[in-house]
Length: 91
Image (tube, rainbow, N blue to C red; front, side, top):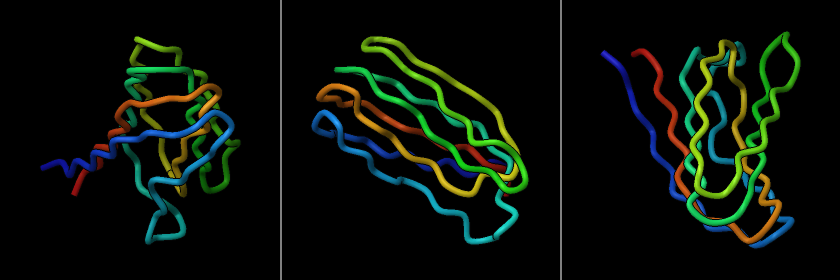
């Protein structure tokens, strides 16, 4: 069974916001999806013992990635932006 967390976001240009911090230092494996409704954003994911993951998501598009050892997930608004961030992890 999977556990889904959904976070709507609305951020001004240049504003970064964290949306997930792992309780376990090793972090879960999960599927992260960003749907950028308005504006452009950078999805930023830090991981245990792995390089940071950074991906630009442009207005009107959706990006999905599956990663392990997720420690934090954040959004940096490159322009004024709204959208939805979703994390799906196994329970």
